[in-house]
Image 1 (cartoon, rainbow, N blue to C red):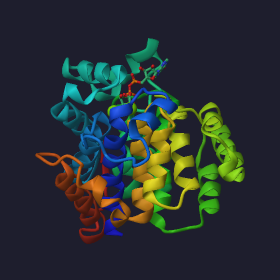
Image 2 (image 1 turned 30 degrees about the vertical axis):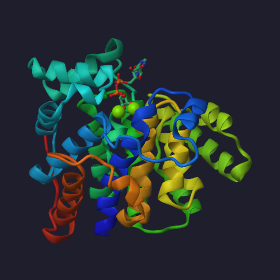
Image 3 (image 1 turned 120 degrees about the vertical axis):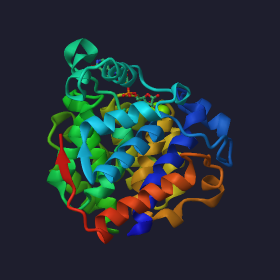
Image 4 (image 1 turned 90 degrees about the horizontal axis):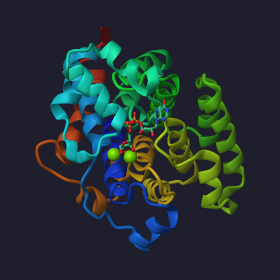
Length: 314
Ligand code: R7I
Ligand code: MG
Ligand code: MG
């Protein structure tokens, strides 16, 4: 179980770092950069992991969700060079200027809030911590998303990604059963439709080409165009490496789809399944590889050793 917790967080960071050098590239260009051997290029993570670290730190320190504290950690950890989305940047700027975390994100995109994937990309700590309680998982996924993403589709995407990780933590259930559970969990019609498509595409097995996956499931920065291809990549392959390579090879928002597929796979197969040649290249330093692993261990400790009843503080 501990290796599932650490696997989810390290897997997310590895997928992010693996996709980062080719973010925004088309499918063909990604393959020409990576060639045959798909080696980790720089091992430097982006905003996806920097924000995931903030989510984990805040859950651990507060023994549960504390919106003002999580927002403060996003701001403290913020490093412009990690490549943040414009919506997230704007929400954090508003909070720095004094708006409350409940209000800041509502002003974005003409008052509708963002449906970008910035809430789903950082959700792994919520997925592992609340893996055994779907209602609480949804509640905390929504609340933690709201700091930057108040659009229903942004929040539901984060909840779906968190629940996929939760199912992966629960055990090595048959993958068809996981799809059934995801179908039951998801509330929004846009995501219900994407899950139906995932099911159809999986039935076609390897005959389906990447163009079809991209046109049916997406590969973009919107939550509904990145959580579905990440789940598909996880369900289609039977190991961490093939899953993450496939997710990144779709092109588009590669670091983020890589991070999401890496988080689900890392939780399912455990930390030991992550290729050494990739994890050794993941950046070290103040909040690098060892620190991320420690956050996974701390969440495990809070859950199982201290048996923390993680309450919600507004
Ligand atoms: O979601 P967000 O933090 O971006 C995350 C992405 C990941 O790929 C990271 O790796 C990093 O590169 O950035 O930032 P947002 O700006 O909230 O959302 C991402 C994009 O989704 C926006 O820039 C828009 O293009 C689009 N988008 C919307 N478009 C129209 N209307 C999000 N919400 C809307 C909307 O309501
Ligand atoms: Mg990124
Ligand atoms: Mg990205």
